[in-house]
Image (cartoon, rainbow, N blue to C red; front, side, top):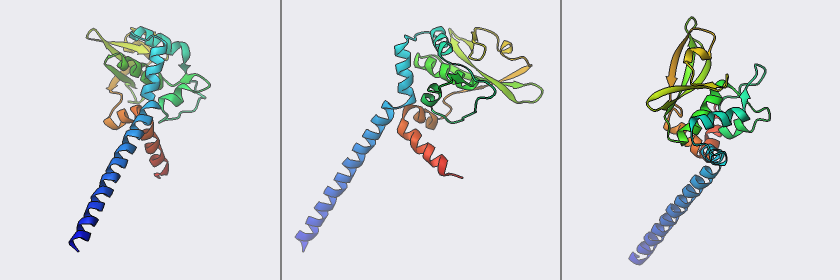
Length: 194
């Protein structure tokens, strides 16, 4: 009887070891495939293909390929960077252009921040632009007007109060940018949540 118990215990350990190894391999595979298909990898390819090594080159490259969305264009929150960049219209909203320019500059090692410009009378933001920290100073890059190195106040026709925010805003958001599989899981869960 002792031999049978020991044999069953030994078999149980082998099964658990096999499950652990299989699970680990699956996690590594999902992480690798997720990275290969990720927004971060797509941005790395774009940056490399176009020789982007300064904020000005990033700004020029983005503005040569994409333009400000029109009022009739649909707002589609939560899209991946790759989906935004593949739009046949080649149009982005102000915040999408700012995010793209910001992420490409982050790849170069620059600190960036999104700036929502709230209307001083209503408190509503009608425009988002980007600032890149260069030589200790925050420099404005406005996708919509295709101008940079201008005062924030020159990017909108109203008296604005700036609200600064980081992008990506959380570790989960960072993961979604760096792993397509994680993005797919979150999108599926959100679609099923009422």
